[in-house]
Image (tube, rainbow, N blue to C red):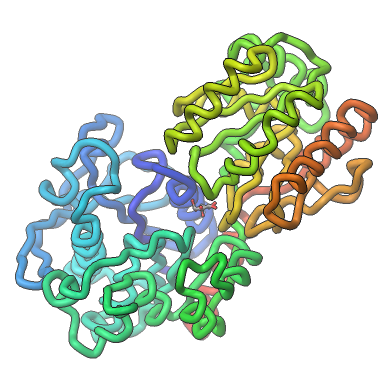
Amino acid sequence: MRIVILASEGAPYVKSGGLGDVMEALPAALARIPGNEVTLILPYYKKIKDNPAYPVERVLEYSVQLGWRDQYAALMRLTNRTDGVDVYFVDNEYYFGARPGAIYGDLDDGERYAFFSRACLNALSILDYIPDIIQCNDWQTALVPTYLKAMYHERFAGTRCMYTIHNIEYQGWANAGFFDDVLGLPWEYRGCLDMNGSVNMMKGAIETADMVTTVSETYSRELMYPYYAHGLDGIIANASWKLTGITNGIDVNTFNPETDPNLPAHFNADTFVEGKRLCKAALQEEVGLPVNPDTPLMVMVTRLAGHKGLDLLCYIARRLLWEEDCQMLILGTGEPQFESFFLQLQEEFPDQVSAKITFNLGLAARIYAGGDVYLMPSKSEPCGLSQMNAMRYGTVPVVHATGGLRDTVPPADENGEGGLGFTFQSYNGDDFLASLKRCLHLYHNDREGFHRLQHRDMCQDFSWDAPAGRYMELFHQMLGA
Ligand code: GLC
């Protein structure tokens, strides 16, 4: 099967969050399935262009029409990818190549990604490369299914399009004028992109894609409710007949405590007690906490953003630190009020708290390996990847039972039996505190039971094999095969 995947980010080339991880591992997992031909297309950002590790050749120069604009584009092929995925970049100096700094956040982001979406379809059309499936992701490539239906239906008559929502919060809103000025779509598509008098690109994708997926089963159901859907609950409900949730995997080769080059000691599900003891001592030392093997170390690697549940953690933090023998370690950057809260907490509780307000992949790996308990009280979480990283490294998750957290962390009882971590149901600080206390109680009073829980976490299969198989089932279904 010929599969083309379009996205605004993909590790290792460019990544701002979980979407980047998925766009590294999912194409590779699909390419491992015999008979598949997998292509990934990303924008040619400055940071990719400037990186000598990514040699390219130019395969095509062409133009892209955006409303009245006629823009230059070039398709660059990466020449050193070795896992069977063909990677291409769309080059345009003005939209991507000459912009320093973060990949998102420019005032013309709408136009930039409209350009990218059209440029991908134009390139495929000019090269006469007709895919069976086009899979696109989040608001940045949300125009693809609409363009496909409106302007390329003859050229790509046999192609089916899947649209995947990784986070419904960012929908690609633009003012009404954007429709004529930039998109240049036929009038009959105005209604499908319109929401409250503005353009909403994600809405258009949900309506025009042949199939819509989200990144966990629970999230696919939550999206029917206003609390989670950021205004799109009605649109999602109308499309529920073509909506499926597929829980992400993680890259189990990169995230492997037996081989991870960032770790001071290596371990597996049989040797983790000793391995994690070494990693924990080294970590406590590295982050300036007292080196104590019997004090439970609670850790968090996260963007410091509101929906990650940090308000709950702020609310209970002092009570927790006063009442419990425990240490807390936070790694991440983000909203200033959270950055200063954790720095302040570190000052107040120097023997219990360490706040590392930075982005550091090596330290993140050492935290997954050296921690005892992983905190993830997200208010909503489409899938979440770090709880799976944590479990793979034997760190017990305490999570809010929402979205992918609910699907990947079935609740254990107070003896640590029957599940993979500790969960709380309603988004509430006291419930979070109670579940954390259950976890710490098990750690302090039944270390054997805690180890059994860690062992179960480490034995889970979080690889992409099963999810990739689910994507294939849906692709076959879309093609009527
Ligand atoms: C987004 C979601 C996250 C998900 C990731 C990959 O970042 O917020 O929950 O794991 O996409 O699908």
